[in-house]
Image 1 (cartoon, rainbow, N blue to C red):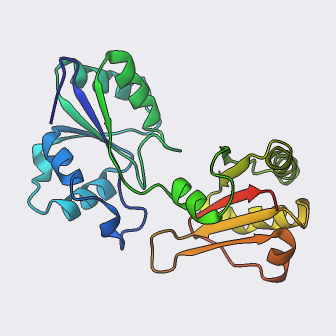
Image 2 (cartoon, rainbow, N blue to C red; image 1 turned 90 degrees about the vertical axis):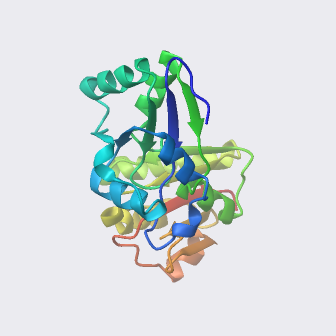
Length: 237
């Protein structure tokens, strides 16, 4: 695998659900073997994940750094590794690094340093949900987390719904799993009955749930999403 004088950075996707190891392509293990330093969101789960795809890996032979919010100290360590022409792996807690993930700041630092950045194929809950929603995949926007405050959240929901309809732009957003039901309640109370909503929960797991219905239809059959990782997608009817 090629390197540069400014280091190489592999963006290593991880499983969305521990019970779905087949979602990680076999070639990911080759990238892992090429790395000497790892920057991870959670060291314990990252180590467990890497051992699952490369059982012979000796964990203590590698440098490990926690990304946190990629504060200056972590960025400095990261940049120093690149200057020493090391091959670095960045691993998200779930899915693809840099997508709704703090690793994005380190990727920006790698680009600024002139490093070779190699994104690797793997599962992304955002993309999987959009693929399965049946909504506009030509023009879409990821809005991240909506506000926690009830009034602010309702206002934000109206704004994303309006953009979905007036700009023909599919709107994708997420919530902390223990607040999913509150967000769903706001969607059902706030949105037009004809607006389409896709709920994609527990993706890649045996309990995977993906359905697209109108707001009116969801009101008749509201799922319990408490503590289930979920993606919400709003679009035109």
